[in-house]
Length: 273
Length: 332
Image (tube, rainbow over all chains, first blue to last red; front, side, top):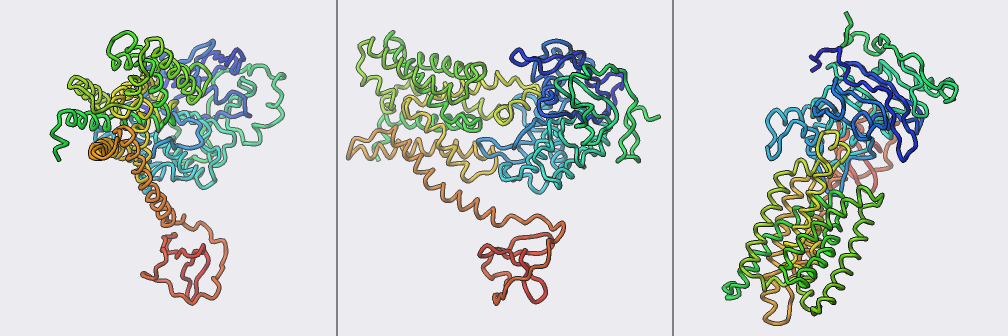
């Protein structure tokens, strides 16, 4: 899936600034996500991590700065099928019953043309996405009857169905019990093994910790730390707690990211040679 | 049976069938977006449109279409920009539409009785050209609602996801609003502007008592809408030999009766499904808790619900889950 030249980073944000209602929420953020990265975006509530993801997916306009997705400025970017998005949600239900299969099938829309039925290829991708999150047995059940953790897995399957190369997940583990978090982690592990690039917003990594190979910590709309994975408690360390002592992270040069400890047997998808 | 040989009755039957088919198709998307009352809001706005038609001497159907479409667009605009919830936007339009309609009728010197035929429908007075317009508009509504179902479903289900998938969310929202406005004016002659929302929402509410997927809900709602619409008209037709029975309210009440019948069935089905759902597999047994003296022998035909639990069956009765363990039963 990741056959493209790896020198074009999937995401490049240059001095990105977002203001909501005149108040700056993101200030001069630089971020480059390389192909194959598993990046955890962390920080306290209100630190701007969700805003950053919403800006990167085009849901919020930048006040200043620029975003390039796969080398194309976001304003001109149309290859949305390369991007999978799992929004922050309490559940996947809506006013009318919908089956798991139907919700996941809506993730396949990026590959479909108007007034055309699903192709065999589409159906196979949808079935596979449901299998990856382990919900095959529940595929024809209504989403509203599933538990919160299962609904979160439905939303991940929906993003998977489009077979994207770059994933944005906004707090997929929030309010999800440990057993479901473990299933979720194994789904993401499969994605990572296929060479997908993953940007994950999380408060606490939990079972996902082993997969992460780069942590970015946000504080007050700025990037406070960008480097090798941090443990959950380190994110809340006092060094990152005082926003004015560390105005900008001065070091924005690229680092070599070593693979995470949990997957020592897997070849690192990017430049391991 | 000579009721069906009258020309007005044949035209009325066609009009009822196509509105019954089209209104729930749009209604499904409105209910999905939790905007069930949007049809009602647009109906109230269309009152102003009808009054405008009566005042200026043009066809009230077409002025109603235009004003209803504008009103629907306005609801979307207020929802998106005005920092108001959908229901607040609807409320604003409710009052404005009805007040404008009554005011304009007064200025035009028209009797309220004329306006009333639009408020509560007058299906037995539709002309052949009315029927043709109704059929054309209903066909557009059904083709778009069914043909663009995957896109409309995705947008109504999760707007943010749909935007990141590259769909033009605002365009689709506006499309649903316009379709709703068109179906309101289509149904105006059948059930009238004040009851139009019922035909859009009640069949959907009835259908979802029994369905688990969106597609079956949409299809079932369209079938139920057609049945209620045609059935209500026929009932009203036969009843009118004995008393003055208006078709519009009859259609709505028949539709509601359908909901009243399905409701307990839905409650029973959901309860049955919940009780029979397999228990999650045992990760680690919490401990061994034998049941109290238990003279009853559970088995295949013992009458208690047997629910799969990991590698065995739990028998559910009186708030207990009993699993066989050697000579006794365990509480699971």
